[in-house]
Amino acid sequence: MNPHRSGLAQDTSPPIASGARKVLMAESDSHIREEPVCTAWQRMLEVVLGVFLLVGVGLLIRYYPSARPIEVRKNELQQQVQQLSRQVEQLQQEQAMPAMVLHRYRDSICYVFGIYQVGFAGRAPELRARISGTGFVVSDGLLATNRHVAQPWYEDPESALLIRKGATPRLEKLMAFFPGLSMPVNITPAVLSAQGDLAVLRIEDLPAVHQLRPLPLAADIPTPGELVAVVGYPMGVLGMVAKSPPAIYDRLAYRRDDQGAASELAALSLIRPSSTFGHLGDVVGDKLIYDAPTAHGGSGGPVFNSEGEVIGVNAAYIDGFSGGTLGVSVRALKPLIVTARLAAVKAAAVSQQNKSPLADTSVSAGH
Image (tube, rainbow, N blue to C red):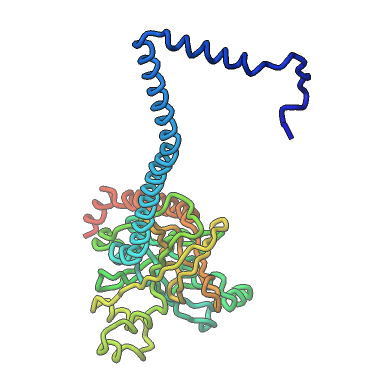
């Protein structure tokens, strides 16, 4: 089948004789023979150059497309190496993060111990219990923790039942044991959150307290999937005794006096928090969900991100579910810190007014 047949008009001109075709070729040959030698040589050079040009173009078409992808692949490989290097560096940073925060901020994370009671006036307490928790320094003289640590009857069903009947709750004592201090310090609630399980406490005014480094609070909202570390005192005194040397363990393991045991651990520089790590599972409002394990006594501890910044306050865990540890975001904590600072400034101003020169004169005159 001839693909050029369709759509063409039939050629009706007489056929060209073979003798005529020879004549034409003969005329061309005779014309070439009549050209000068230089003209023939020039044309031969043009033909040779044309051949070389065609060969060069062919080689360029053949090899240039493959050379360009090699350069592209080289750049892509370099980018992949750089990306892998960043990922390895990030993994090394994440793996070192729990040890880093524990080493850097250990002395500012305290064990909280307290005793509270709920009862009616003129009668023995209906309920008297101990409380163990964790707190951490967020500003000079201020401590952050959970509300259920600072106010132990908060969300406690047994206490709530008595309070509805007219009973009054009261803190007998609340104290903090810091790793770098050989004696406990008294703490008092300064601001309690009305909407979440957060509280800011005022630390007893001592020179050593002002040397404690506040923990850095994250400015950004955390991203699910990132590494987190939780530092605190899970299992309270029992957990610290379990880590103590054998002689100390044998002496304190079965003691029921948590305050006495904690005081002895403090005198021996054995108040030491523990660190666990996991991954942030989800962020819902001001609630953080992560799988770093904890236990009672760990409430109120800081939750760190991979940068060593506090993103939340450890609050609770779902029993029987390893991925169900709950915390409260520092976004809800920051306003409480501001309020506590303002209250401290006002208290200092009132105290300064009470120490007026007139008051000092009257006291001297009385003596």
